[in-house]
Structures are given as C-alpha cells and as structure tokens.
Image 1 (cartoon, rainbow, N blue to C red):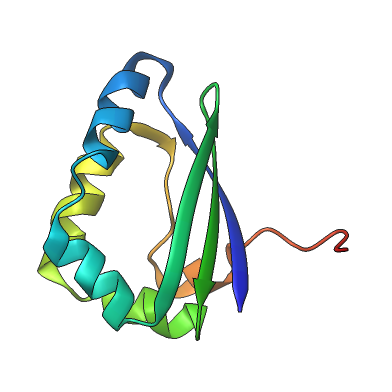
Image 2 (image 1 turned 90 degrees about the vertical axis):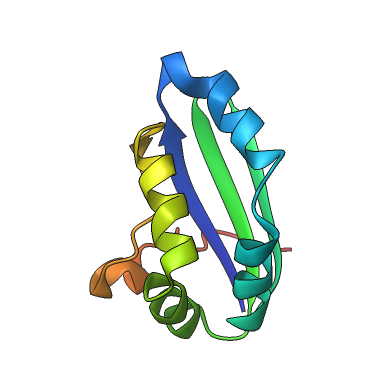
Length: 103
C-alpha cells in the first residue's frame, strides 16, 4: 500500500531537521524495513514535509514502530523539530492524506 503523510518542521529548525535525516540510525531504518516498509521518501517545501511510504500494512507498521525504543528516541528528537509530527498513537493509522486523484 502507498501512504502519503504531511508533517511540518519548525521554521527555526529546518537545517537541524535536514541534518538529522542525513544520519538516521541504521537500527531505525532496519526496524522500519522489518515493520513492512519498502520505501519512505520525504520531500520538503519550505517548512512543509511530504512523506510517501510504500508499506505492506501501515497500521501494523505504526504499531510495531511505536513499541520500539529506537523509534521512541527518534520521535522524541523529531518532536523538538516539528510543528506537526507523525502520529504514532492508536489513531495514527488514520492520519494518511486522502487520495484525490491518481494516474
């Protein structure tokens, strides 16, 4: 399944956000893959972040990652950089952007 998300980085933390993503921990990327994601791309336009995730089951991925210490550490780091964060709560599986049109 393909999932699109929208988050927003704080205007005064853009450079730090970009730098953090140049050094995502290997343990975290391995956990994301193990949770069923085959691709996760983030684009930034100003402070708006657009994520495109290819994943077997998004709700399962969120549940698995939400329970992992390596993800908790990363989400805590991101919380200080983001105005709008990726939602790992039980309702987070409903967070994807709705498809409006597809070719």
